[in-house]
Length: 389
Image (cartoon, rainbow, N blue to C red; front, side, top):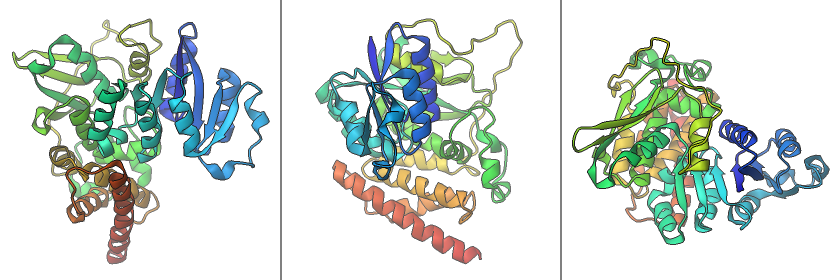
């Protein structure tokens, strides 16, 4: 029995993870579920899955939420310490890292430090601290298996050859809701428009990241550390059907790809059962229906965020932590109308260029730089808002 802690169980990744667990109760169970503030949904999940632990990351809820709501079999914990406790516990075999943003770093770090299998859905962990996390995994014997559809596709395609024979990987991108738009058109984008993704059903912040293609920038950086690649071994191609999730090209010219209808339960299930493959609950390809698969290069002028990803992947050091923090802060400002859509990558560029680069930071250095970059982005966005008005 694979005992699983789902960090961020009330989010989209968490919900899909629980769907996989529910379909395979003969081989996996939910040992722990965590949420930030959504205690009502968390309590409902606990009633259904009866985990040993539930964790609310928001410590201010302690004393305000009745533990009786979570059932007699579930112990309710609070704060980051509670998340770290379940991530490290010997009665947890696998940790699904599904907390969105840099907030997911602590739980993932604890799981890697404890030598767990980690199903990595939180790309920010490797964007912020990729070299440190991968080095820690080598020392503790932890196994990191990607859940992002693109990185799962690369992981699966890599099984077809030797790592030394990899020429490059190709990350596919749907292009988001504004594929084909010019930079001038993008200046007028509203938060409501940016929330509408044509293919995937994701949370608001991830959907905005897809619209700016900053999510692809983060995926470039994550891929560098996860698969031990040089930045120039990574390429991005726009594929609006979201059927080919990514590809690996080998030195002999062979290209291996993973295809499936877009559904996150498939990569999640593979991460939980690897190296086995079992009957899945995701939609299957229908080969009796005609279909076309399109590929085109991304518009780097309209979506400069992609170039940021390549630059940060090449530079390493503190750049990933700064880019991610600036991105998160800028998206927050966009959603409340303080800045425009195109100002999100502009803010990231400005803060990146202004920061004091450190090639070999410690984890505490990265966390400190994260705080600095968020504050610096707020100053930049405040100035941009004042100028535009």
